Figure 1 (cartoon, rainbow, N blue to C red):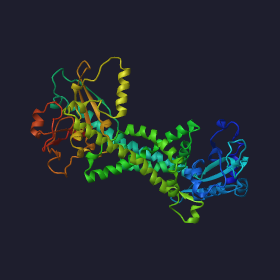
Figure 2 (figure 1 turned 90 degrees about the horizontal axis):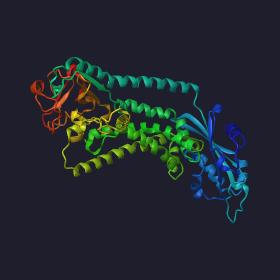
Figure 3 (figure 1 turned 30 degrees about the vertical axis):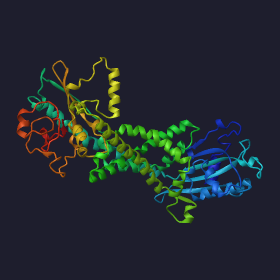
Length: 523
């Protein structure tokens, strides 16, 4: 293995200038052999005691992945009085990298003496050229073509499954809604208003992301998918372990953004515990757009920090949890490191959610103004991505028309969520972006009313929590185009309800009135 890697990666095949180190490539790749390497020019001391070995070790390329055998090799090299003789006797050190016992990659480290690098030495060790080295750490993937085809098939099936979920959990509900608006809107008491008659509707479709990110099977499979490509995840970690070549660093950060699935999966698991312990009020809903951007921002620097500090010793310990002492000298098992990485990256949104809930409670305690129902009906009460799109829309619109919030009604679920956190079915996930908006227009195509509708799938009716908070299901069929939640009896709803928005306060007698044809959208 070492012979192949040293043949591919050396100071001749990838030219190295000892006088102009800034022009040298740090990250190296050779596609035909499915290998890559990272090299650092280092000035290294000799006769170094084991107590100081780790301090020097963290300067080595890719050291976060060094197993026990590689670390012992480096410490023995640094302790040698004649390092050139040591290299001649011990040309390199290699290790096997496994995931749950399956071969993943082979990694090798070797040092090449170099002249004209900054010297290092002390009074008892006169400085010589042999103290200056180019250190190589190279890896070769052991992934077979069969496994590559398996991943392709797996991801194709996963894509089809996600498309199925997007349809069955979200878009199919638009068929019922539009059919109800088309056939039962005329004379619907919920659409009565002062002004010109409504002659048409425009349905503005929402974002189904909530239903995919919060799906337990999808989030688990996508965490698994990240580690099916553990070789490339390791490559991304090597990219971000250095900052000399910023192009590779940024590329590693973007690939590392896949770890956002660690966060979504952890949020899904914690959401179940939060519901069981009735701690919904301690957690705020996390905007998935902000989370995705945050992962791109913090995943790379976090990996860099672990790769260039004593934090790497945590992974050195984890690599050694599996296997006998003799196996640990030649092999590392990365699965314990996977569990740690998932837990670490997944903990950030949990902490953010708790901090956001604390801050919101503090701001609410300071505010004396009552909640305005139109606030929850407005399109601006939304997640970051939707607000950004609204901002772009306002820039490129031909007129300076702004949203008239007095025309907006609905958003009942969000008002309920604000008043009692237990109504959130998945407390850590934001439902807002999945809402749709129905623009009610008159004969001149002018919007006379705008409805904000949410899917009932995001509501926990608290049926097992007693009459104080439970939302009872109305047993009577209704002709209204969508669901409503209010304090009116069914007869009152059927005969006299007008489109005045949600009631101002909760009641022990909240009722859910299902729309025509079992419509799942609620005003």
